[in-house]
Length: 330
Image 1 (spheres, rainbow, N blue to C red):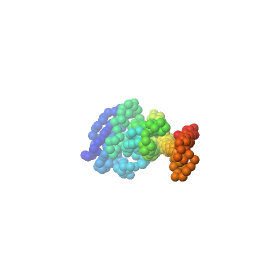
Image 2 (image 1 turned 90 degrees about the vertical axis):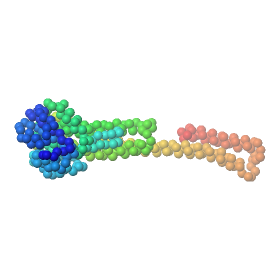
Image 3 (image 1 turned 30 degrees about the horizontal axis):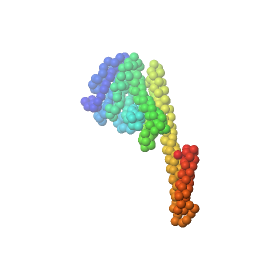
Image 4 (image 1 turned 30 degrees about the vertical axis):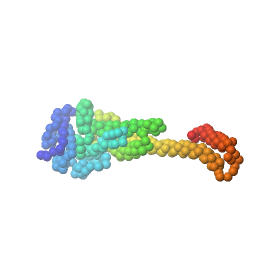
């Protein structure tokens, strides 16, 4: 094991107590042979040699290792004879959910080890380690304790992302009628971005429900009885995020329809006002056009004829204005 990943982290628990941290990767096989030990190995941006090493040291199935080597796997849980392989995604929302950062995680679970593989460092593993340290009293429950801390961090990230999207959607809803949501183009851009990211988030969180539910099965022997309530809590969060995502998709669709309806109503009001003013302008045009004829008419060439034409123009214009105003067309 001469060559290691660009970033490798290790931890060793013995009988439920943290004993070593940051020890060399080549020592993992020696520690696994000791009774009462639990090992965590994290590889960030591993090389092909690293995958060969973990395959040999941990006895991992070649198909599972192949899935871990290739990115963009669907979220899933695969069971093998003496270990499980999990593929999941951590997310982080930016700008009110209009931008979504997605980090892929590959996880191998054995009886005495948890191996996490990340293609890059976008997912903060320090927060997972902090969760393990906060719940150190549960370390005696084996690999289920380590896996719970990882799942809890990932699902909480899903929860925070959907919460941020919900806040942004409420902000747009409140600003639709008072104009604070921005221009029509801004609203359309934001809603389309939110809708797209909600679809992406749904594809990530929906398989998590089946994944966590499968992990709680007793025949896998990953989750012991003391850890079962903690996994049930994670499962409840997964259900909430899934249902929340579905409801937000409906809300975004409603916002888009409402925005179009508002724009249509505004256009109708504009057309009514333009038409009303055009009708008012048409009256003096008609009267002056009549009196502008090159033929004699009653009052032609007299002062009273001019006064009559002016009076008719003003009276009809004022009458139309008052009538349109009463109907709220102006």
